[in-house]
Image (cartoon, rainbow, N blue to C red; front, side, top):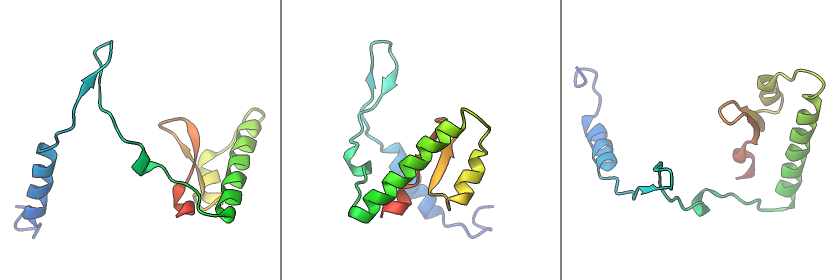
Length: 105
């Protein structure tokens, strides 16, 4: 069926091999819950210039303001993302505001 749909099975096979060859070490904490150690450095982003610093500060002020406004009235979190061109979004999974890192690349 997949070959009829002209899906390249080699790519799928290579992804499967890469997944199965995962040699990540699994550790266990005191309660017996598994975890892995991750080097955070490749995922950290820094601002590159004064303009980005000002932009980041403005987004942080917006988030502080939104949190203060939420104490007094309902804030439509999805609309904030639309109004800021997705510069500031609300992460429903973590239940917190997030600044889009794409504005700092």
